[in-house]
Length: 77
Image (cartoon, rainbow, N blue to C red; front, side, top):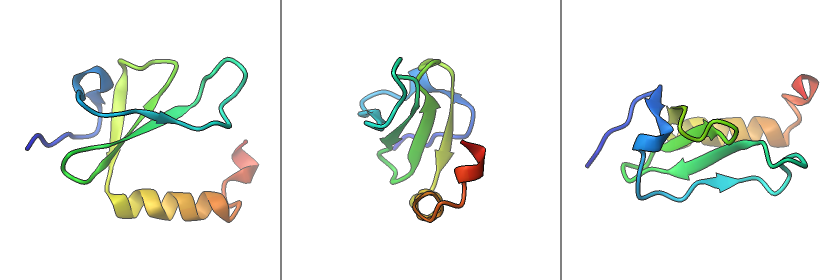
């Protein structure tokens, strides 16, 4: 099984499905996430799909999503 580390080129992560939020802006720019075979989650910038990807555990993604749902990051938008 392939292990990916933070900063890996997103273009090197193959055989995954990148998901983009339906709430992305009018030009489609957003972040995209993909489930990795080892159970982790990769995140990339849709404006730079071949650029670096950040890799998180499922627990880290769950904590972020909980914070986002709880409006903890609203001041950044």
